[in-house]
View 1: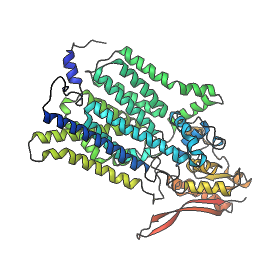
View 2: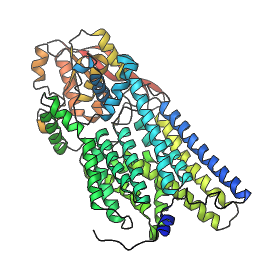
View 3: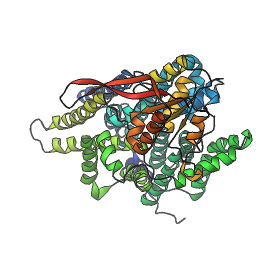
Length: 543
């Protein structure tokens, strides 16, 4: 690598110092009393903002957290944790090795005995909340490292109130822990950029390894790191250190493929099947899915403020802006081009967006104060408050009890799912088998009802189905022979797969289906009244 011109150490220290640490030491340079009081007051304000972020963030994530039962993904991940913990019932339905690495599932397994089979859903969600709040604090540390403590505190408040982060970290999903590990990696990279000490680059490699173990899609952020190093020539590094950092990442990741290989039972073949399925699975949303859903969940005003801040410094971007922009752009481009799209997949971009918006607020406040316009100093707090309010209101609305029979994967629990599963467990014979519209409701029935479920929509073509799910090759034969005794229709799956919903109902009619249980939720009728609408209907069928 070509060497760069020598830079005076004092100049480098000055240019790389963060706003939080660039002030002179009191002992070396005595401050006026007024300055000391102002500095102490500023530190107190920063701590109060951070405390507000953690308290309100906890309140939003804990409010009615277990009012709805688990959705399909939550049931799978908690079912894996139960299998790791040795639960004799759930391990029959949820194998340990599926499509993703197991870092979060192992953490859930450690907490599983606290709740047991009946209370594990609440305990699992509380663990997810703890990870979410830890991410809020980590954003404070990253923001303070990049732009000073005030920016870090405001960024933490924005993330604590952001609907996108609130919704996902109230659930047992892998994207919350992955975002924590990704933000930890971002913090490590920022420390390396500020100090150019290789140890922080090595730590970033370890952080990226943990990000992969939380969810394998997090590996795309490795592209963000490489893009940042390529676009920030002012950051000097040795290729040897970059290679060693990558090796550390691989070493952290290694236990996952080794465990699959050593576990036997066709684990390696199953992993290969998952890879093929991920590469060739059909698109599940239109290309407009992310532009139409994610900005609203992140907060339009927050995004506009972050963009405005970047535009104001467009002629003098530092490595800080390059790092945060790379952390956002690479995942957005990847997932926008990837056929499979999920509501929570872009969550790792939320922390850097919150930091950029916080810095923009401070920057706009400083520019306004420089104009010496009366009361211009109130611009920053007013703008921060406005952004916080536009985040708080939709977050509060989204965590209220659902009155909709539509469901967006990754956006919350399934109304009536827990209740239907518990009814099945208490009122159907052991060994009974259920046919559902798709695998989502089958997972919920297996977790809460402890009965086997199969989805009618599961494709018999191995390239078009998740290897964890078995197709129903001949539904008529299995219904006539009594291998399937119950049919479960749900409005959530019906909204996504109307063809298979109608097909399932035709089987219920053909085989003398008798409604034995119904779960309903209150929904708003066109005339404004509230009516009870069935969302899950269980049929008992006879040949």
